Length: 277
Image (cartoon, rainbow, N blue to C red; front, side, top):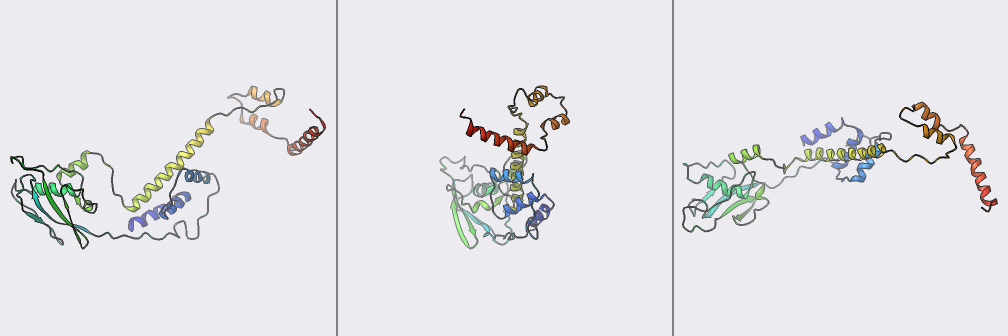
């Protein structure tokens, strides 16, 4: 919960729209292109006032979920796995530390390969049969584990249980893999996920604004004007050296523009009913 509270504390230093977006994320809202455009439009308007107590005042605190612990119980019934002796059982202390030791070639790495192939490991090696046996057959065995008070087992030739994958395995080969290969991080704390979602929204809003800028940067067609009037003369002389003052003067409406327009509308209406052409 400390990370979650730190994110909220950090967010209160951000612009109002990011605080509002983060509050919506925490509340479970999803965002799409339409939402990005709405946020972008809000940025050119007056800032929205937060509710009493701030944008995060009405949020329900995140509840910490407690998953049932997963523990290895034993590796047993191995057959045709490297040169491991068949009929042996390696058990693990449920409430302590299990130390496996022995001389080189005694089977420590063989058991480690079996375990790493069934649990969550960055580096896995294929389990091979005894290369010195004339007809060793297919490797087989059983991994026993517990989820809370529920004891389960899975065979080497079966798909690993998703709960068994929650156990993390690490050895020297895993360390080398972390240092030398690229990979997607599969787990992120919920507070970090909030920041990722907020970053996605900021990217979406930026994309909308960039599209607007690109659209506005494209010159549109010049207006159609009477070629005999002053507007046409101004457009003919328009160039990169035309000053802002000249543009402002050219587009400035006379003070009685509204009255003149109303008079013209009445004239047009009169002509439509009195002139058959």
